[in-house]
Picture (cartoon, rainbow, N blue to C red):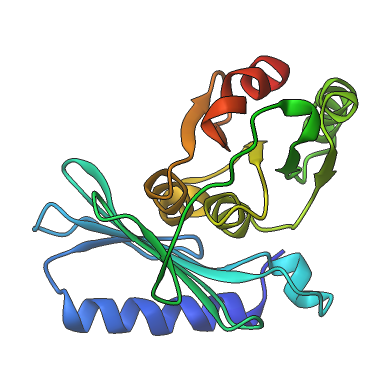
Length: 213
C-alpha cells in the first residue's frame, strides 16, 4: 500500500536533498531516482510502516541513508510518534536522540526476543510461516513491528535481541542496518532471493542464522 503521505514526504525530502546536495544521487521508495555525479547516493524510505500508518497504529518511521563508495556512511531513522531519532555515522557509533546506544547482551537464543516481518505475496507468506515453525519454539518470543528500519533500530538499542526478514528492498534497510552495526550488532545478508537480512546480538547471530537460512 502507498498513501499520499508517502508520496508527499518523499517529495519534500527529495527537494531538500536536491537543493542542499545537487551533485548527489537519490533512490526513493516512491520513485525518486537520480544517478548524481559525486559518488554519493541518498536512499530514502519516506514512510516505512505504511500499513501501520493507515490503520493509525504506532510503528512507522522515516528512514534516510547516505551511501558512498565504501557502502553506507550515514543513517537516520526518525520515529515521530515516540519523538525518537536513531542516527549513525560509519565508524562513529550509533545514537538515540544524541545518546550512545548499544546492542543487548543476549547470550542464548532461548532467552532472546526476536523481531521479523512478512511479505505481501501469499506464496512468500507461506514460506515465511514455515520458517516460524522452526524459530518460535527456539526463542523467548517473536515480535512483528511492521517496519524493517524500526526493527533494526530496536536491535541497535537492545529492545530486540535479533531480527530477520526476507523480501526487503534497499530503502528498507540502508539506514537501519548501519545503525544496528554501529551499535555492535552482527548484521549479515541471508542467502537467496529476494534479499534478506539478519541483525542480532553477536552471541546469538549464528544460531539465529542457522534457523532462518
